[in-house]
Image 1 (cartoon, rainbow over the protein chains, first blue to last red):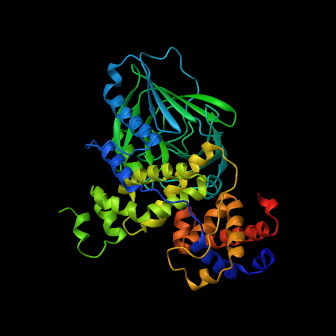
Image 2: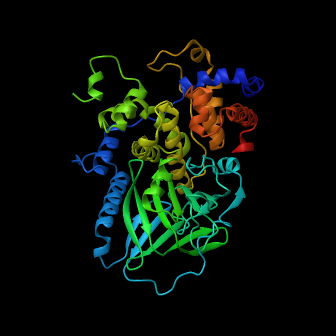
Image 3: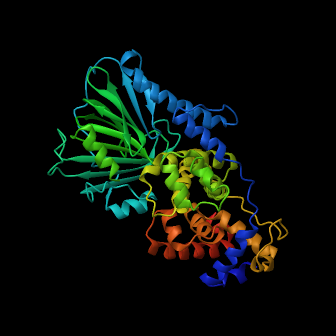
Amino acid sequence: VSDRLRLLDDDGLGGVLHAVGERIDWPPEPEIAPAVVRSIAALEGRPVRRTALTLPRRRRVLLLAVAVVVLLAAAALATKLVIDLGALTVEIVPGRPTSLPGVPTRPAGLGEPVTLEQAAVVAGWTPLVPGSLGPPDRVWVDQAVTSFEGDGETTRVVMTWRPGPGLPRIPGTTWGAILMEFDGTAEVAAKVVYEETGSIRQAVVGGTDGYWVTGTHVLRLLGPSGLESHVVTGNVLLWNEAGIVARLETALGKRAAIRIADSM
Amino acid sequence: MDGASAHVEGRPLEDAQLVELAKQGDVRAYEELVSRYQRLAFRVAWMVTREAAEAEDAVQEAFVKAYLALPHFRLDSPFRPWIMRIVANEARNRARSNRRREGLALRAAAASGDAAPSPEAAALAQEDAEALAGAIGRLREPDRLVIAYRYLFELSEAETAEALGVRPGTVKSRLSRALERLRVELADPEVTS
């Protein structure tokens, strides 16, 4: 059997595979649409019928609900709070930092320097590029960043643009915009925002909830050489674009940053 | 009467019409899209995660993420490969976290199911079907997926490119390499497993 099949050319083998497709013994597919609609209703604050959500789904819906509450209540609470975006988390802690890392966000070293096309091949997905910024000046890719907990991996692509008209330099860096994209749910980056020196607000990017972080704060990143801590001097927009967690750092205001994000 | 229910008495709406309604917040229209593609989405997710419960969760999450991303979806693009790409990404994330490394238990059933098979499927010898299904299941995920999109799910080359997030010209070469590795797997199951 095997020899006969192996001798077929691509077209011949393709034809047989078409027929195989009708004969595959697939597992029975579940009814997914009702659970999806309930999740969307929960996200949009509509009444939700509380039946048939699987346990993992229920946990995620709860996490998202908690994230919204955090935005409203963060300033009033005196304990550490966490917004979980999957690959990236934001910790909001009371008070001000006693010390800050000396190094601002430094994209170089966060993976292999590559072209945009090579990044897509290595990452296995096409990095999202804001059309309003044009092609990035530099690109780095890290195919598998092991999480803080060591229990998973996330792919990371980092793109940078030089300062130019309408794109001022981020203080302490040589760049006008730094865009990090994470594909995965294993936590490999954490932001620490101190209530007295930074702020986090809701932002809507293309209809999707995002977060706008301003003020000096700390970014902890897992890189090839281990954990690195950076002081963030720019303003940061965080959002989720079709499963990709995006982090855009610029010296621009909120509206301008959202315009860039909306051009992806 | 809302937009999605308007089609009930007439012919089904096209994907693009449902997407347009969903973009305007019509959740019933989106539910119709999910119903339309949940079977294919589940099979794609299962081919990546190799585990049904994990695949179900990945598909649910992917459809919710896709709904949130609809404002960025271009109406002149096909919905099917776009959602398949999101599903595969979500499933891949879960498969990575799972760290499962065993192959996919892909099996061929005898040609006596409820649906009438095509003449080609009916003529396919059971041992050939079993050998090929088993070999596909033992391939690496990228090879498995390109073969599944193109042949098992019958996506066009353009749709396959969109679903994989590659240029259309890349699909042919990827497919050719995947078929070559399938031949190797058929010859010696130990080589690529």
